[in-house]
Image 1 (cartoon, rainbow, N blue to C red):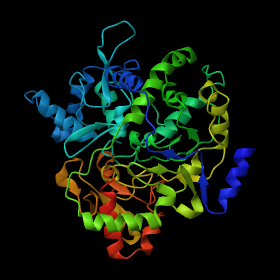
Image 2 (cartoon, rainbow, N blue to C red; image 1 turned 120 degrees about the vertical axis):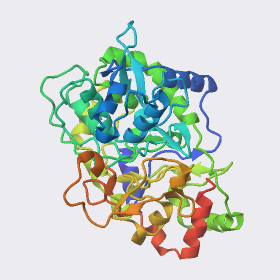
Image 3 (cartoon, helix red, strand yellow; image 1 turned 90 degrees about the vertical axis):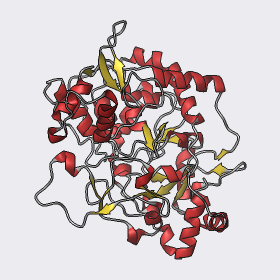
Length: 453
């Protein structure tokens, strides 16, 4: 009752204070951080999903782009990564990119392969890979389908769309489907529960946000201390007892998440403009996004849909039945998910220069377009590479080409997913129009300041 009362107090302002604010100086235990780093980057936690040979055989499905037998391992890796939007692993990984890992049966040789967390949470920018940077180039659908076909297996029926655009993922629906075939005691059930979720694909936020946030996910429903919330994504094969065994390891992994720092902006910054932009930021942005520097604080605020105006499907798609069922399980015993449907949490802005495209669904390619809604493209494409030759320092984000109309005739799925179409379910680029009231100079100064974060 106390929480509901507190929510009502803030709704009139359209902003909800979720929990105590974050202040600079908070930091995880270094020993736990190191254990978590090793556990995340050197260990797989799923059984094989494909044969080890599927990695190389996938190339035979690329039509005229298929590599020949003489293609070197390095050249094949580069082509594989570009095709599926994966990135070179910055840690030992048996020649595989971030997101794929050698796997075997317990106690057996690792002759198979499986995905891991970095398929979504391992990105790159400017030729440098980063654990915890959201993967904004991933084509999850193409990757999973091609690896399955490479093993000469029949594709499973699709219960929902994985992604309709490169760089977005639908982890929420994966979780919802997995929960629907588990009882409250997490035992398996033959007939799925009708949980009624209808979640859209999303942009992947950076893990370093968790250093400031006291909640997880875009809707702020889950406490950031919840280790078990991450374990829900292992429901495809783990029993309750196996999940319990993993909990201490993933507590260390969560500490590692919270230790991560964003990369520094690599280009020149105009200090005079940035100082003016800091003033613009203080007048217009601090209330929701917090302050930065040695004495920085982050308010952990959820903004009501009527105020933020961004695509509402993620907020509405997590049904009460799904949340209620989740809360009856071991996953939520320590930190239940909030049943309130309010809006979206205003994210921290550390390293914002590296996290384009913007909004929770990745529908805006640059900061300049985010701050001037009239400049947002309805449909656009961007290069599949994250090299700096494709980065736009002036507008802060990815260079893009406007697509004026839907292709006719329709493109094959692999090609169509290079087009981000904001008319699709969950992909609207509306909302967050707070920058529209600023003049061009103020917007430019604000962008210069944001480069410093």
